[in-house]
Amino acid sequence: MMYSMEVKASRRFTYQRERSLFNPVNERAGGRVGGGWPTKKVLCVYFLEGRCNRNPCRFAHTESQTLPVSNHKKSPPSYNCPKNNVRVSSGSEEGTTHVQNRENPDRTVPNKSSLDCSTGSDDSGSKRTLERTTPKNVCYHWLSGNCVKGDECRFWHSWFCGEGFTMLAKLEGHKKAVSGIALPLRSDKLYSGSRDGTVQLWDCHTGQSASVINLGAEVGSLICEGPWVFVGMPNVVKAWHIESSAEFSLDGPVGEVYSMVVANEMLFAGAQDGNILVWKGIPNTQNPFQLAALLKGHTRPVTCLAVGGKRLYSGSMDNTIRVWDLDTLEAVMTLNGHTDAPMSLLCWDQYLLSCSLDNTIKVWIMTEEGNLEVAYTHNEDHGVLALGGLNDPDGNPVLICSCNDDSVHLYELPSFMERGRIFSRREVRVIETGPDGLFFTGDGTGMLSVWKILAKPNAEMA
Image (tube, rainbow, N blue to C red):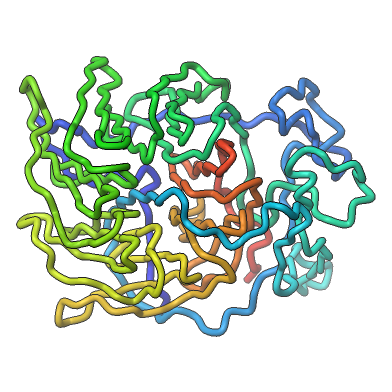
């Protein structure tokens, strides 16, 4: 039997207390989809710019094509797991080496094999299969908005390909890389932080920028918990309560803050000097955040944090993942499975997933002795930067991962069968999931994209 994974879309732990400072209740606003019935397969450029006013429009407002997938060498082992909640925060260090050529916009994203799409059954009841031929490479001139060949271009003119998901909107406003995305409790505003030193507030109903907060320094990470928004910056963490407008500056970090996570009424922040700072949330006090501990062990910047069960997991540019006990705040083990920096961590059921610049995604499982060992390793062609996970409307687990070849892959678990692929102008370093199948990506140009997981079409008929 295959192992079961179920992700809570809003990434909230269920530590609910009546007098909780963080108040992790999941109530959020969503977005909307525009469009009409297209009569052409060409994607509407006005729709991509957010200003098409035709309904129906003869051009496509979304495009979902069949994705060639790789023949994976082996499938992960099968497990039965209890269903727990998931909590993830990821970050990265600016200046990491990228395996890509910015001087050549004709660089390509290879597909590895072809995929048959089931389209139903014929009159005899047998399954009818449609093989679709797709271009092997995405057109980076088109992604940049300057392809002059139009329909005659032999490369792919699309932001994505695959099935079971769609693009809702592209939000442009940041001038540099997006470093954090959050949708706070009881808010109709989507927050995004950037290396350009700003936090943008986006109206969830219109998709327009509602406000811009200029912080004057690079944003290294941004998360939310309940009504709180936390912004990691050089040598400080800003804490905003969006309902009361209270604002606090949490001093102590040395250098940039690349990752943050909240658990057990504590805020954890991973800093550039390799330390993890811990603030305890104390409600109904003048200063609700008290520095409680400093977790030392990493020798290089902390790139990512995640919480699962009673454990805190931290990844670092020193190529290790350290495991901390949430009750004692002591290190309990160090994982040395990666040969390059772990960039993102994801706790899913009783599993820990980690991705790295060593081109791998590893699935870790707890042994009977209480140790973590690698149960499966998935290999990519490029370094992996960020992970996200959620379930589609049919309950199927979908893993989302971005690579430093400017692509984002959607995998069905546990098989790691590729379900779709997203293309971007620059690498996507932030993936955030939301309610009702929504997920968000932020790339190196400052583009924020809104996506939605759908039920997978053409499911096999009994």
